[in-house]
Image (cartoon, rainbow, N blue to C red; front, side):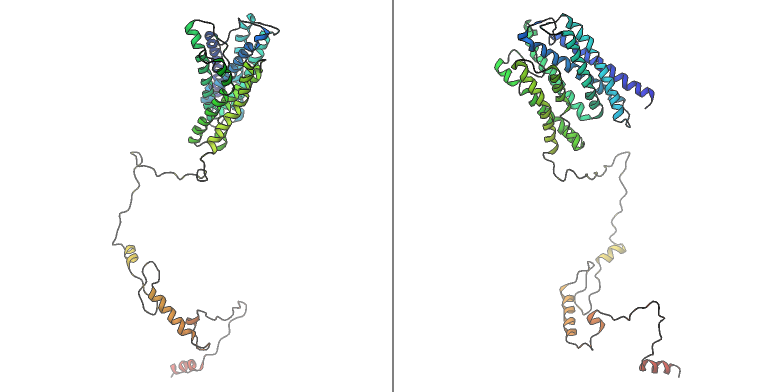
Length: 392
């Protein structure tokens, strides 16, 4: 790759990741999803853990967005090393959110926790893991579809959860990543749904993305892994944040841990269901339709009076012995077959001395010796008399 192409790839990945990371943080601060000004006691430690999961996920998605933006600057001959360099650049760009989270965290009061260090460490770990997300986004179309789908669903849940509080002007509740925490959802139902929301969404998204990849005629491996990248970001974000201390955070933690498997299951189902042996065979290309720039091929008109047509319709000679003559197809009729059978019956009544080569189909040939010169045979009596009579 030329230096200018390298510069465009690295610059686009770095700049897009930094821009998306800062934009997500600004939106989260504005909606109240992130708020470091709260006083968090030991009994409400899960509120802090929820915000750590969001910060880690912001870093992951920022790096993936950098890979998505830099995709257009890859050359057709770019290999895995080039995509890895683009992923590293995207990860460095995503790390721009580290100071943007550490500075507001100075006002956070978390019992027994160094808030600034912990929030910065989560952002760094998320940016480092985002290198692989950006690498996948640079290489596979199915990975980009999965990342975009699951990211859109996470933001949709967050906006729906905070919308009632923004309308009424009340305090925004603690919104968990990938969970619908809207005020109109009963607490018992929200707690039970938090265990199944992310796996169900990952399964549906895996099936949808797998079907799209299958329609695009991608390889079987690409289709089967199409549901992996998007749910994997939820899994990594919750692993970085931790399981928390109560069911409010433990249930989403285990849901995120199983979301990756559910996403892969959905894409595998899309890859194998309804696929028979005929689908694996290469399809014959359809005949090209005539177009203004591609006129139809010339065709020869039928000539019924040609010699080939007359020979095809002309009856062939019959078999010896009479009967109906053979047609051009070469199939013998019943009468010629009967004549052949009658001749075979007559030949079977003759003695061995009276049999002719035409009766048995066996012609006796003298042994061949390529090294001995042939000897002149004496003519028979009748033949010799006839030859000698020629000279008279």
